[in-house]
Length: 278
Figure 1 (cartoon, helix red, strand yellow):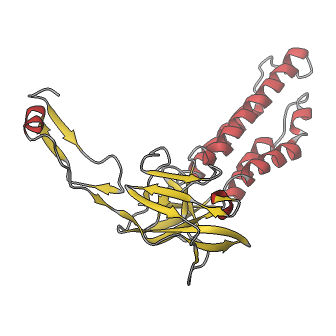
Figure 2 (cartoon, rainbow, N blue to C red):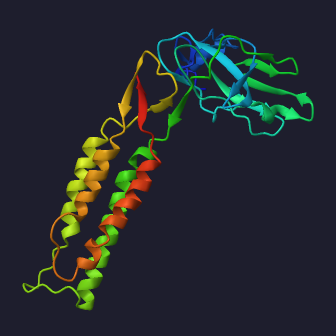
Figure 3 (cartoon, rainbow, N blue to C red):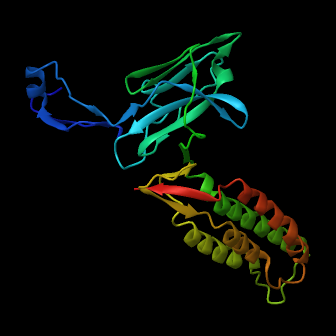
């Protein structure tokens, strides 16, 4: 570190809080080692216990988020949020709602013969799964939140763009083969203009489906529910095929039903609702 260079040390994770440090390298070196008093904003709430989820034994882990915000500890921070199990399949939650919440992991992941063992290492805390698992008391199924891949909600637009390109190429192929003839000699692909309108409408429909989004079994108080407008998206896509087409392109528009069914399969992969948090 340069003696005269100014350095800023701040938290890289919202779940860990401390006052930022702004000092020169010389100042930091003079008082080395520098101790940073940090506060953990998510704490393990209790020992793991056994819970039935859909008739299957699970291990339930609970934690308390002392803020009014949904906080995340990504699994990419494996030294801060990692789970060890017999099968290697166990994975902890990444999103933690305000207050006390929890998540469950199949007990089979921690089981070898009659032995049950595992560890959840979380923000410097260690939670051990042992043979002495007790049945959870007064708890329903866990209400944790899972991050939604932002790219997932853009798949309707990505699929529509790919479809428009494919239809355009088919129309141009029909023109080159002589199947589609225009008296004026000018060829205007109808699917391009309709497709542009469909994409513009989809962009407006999905304006709230961007940024950090989650699916939650229980919606945190500081968060709001955003509906994924599947029916409106389907209507926008169908508009690409509505209307007359030049003679010679009927074979393309005749596939409207099959194309709409394929788009419906894309929509089925999307959640019906997502949660947006402040």
